[in-house]
Length: 220
Image (cartoon, rainbow, N blue to C red; front, side, top):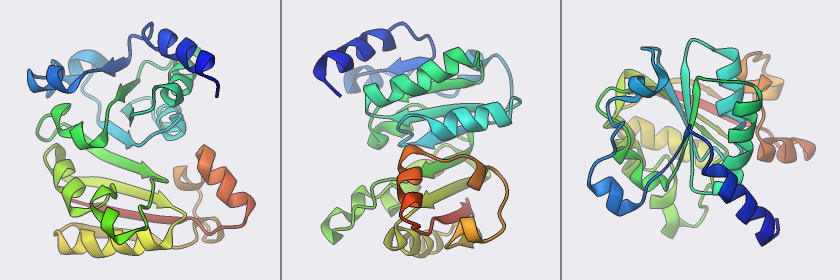
């Protein structure tokens, strides 16, 4: 994408009332909706996050499927978020919001027991051992999520990377999470729900090469 298109998208992003972009200095002073997201959505429905949401395929797909739940997509790339924001506006989805931030800062945005579920869809597996802490399912991140997930709150991981899938199972068990479901090839397993009916941009690319897609579900 050219710089001109990116700048146009960044400019349009500022017109979306459901996009939240805060600097680190602002977050240190307190995010106004932390613990109060129901004031934004104007209901008491469960709140579900998609972390590293990219273009927001899961955020939008789940919001359409479950109108009585609220969904927030989180990503650091504003040009990618633009697509999700456009889709939400065009589909007139009032149960969708997006946050532009690094996942390292996610705990600044949500209060204790505020989130019911987290979807992590095709994150960078950070294959090198030295980058293990950057994996979105590392102990560092799982314990951040624990700060705002409800008791029995669920985390979903969808990935093409067997290394990340196996690693997450091991880490989740070591950190005291309860493994609910595992599958190493969801498209050849008979699963027929949002795990297979919603596909991300990267997922579609991997499926072209017949790469098995793994899915893992665990709870606090």
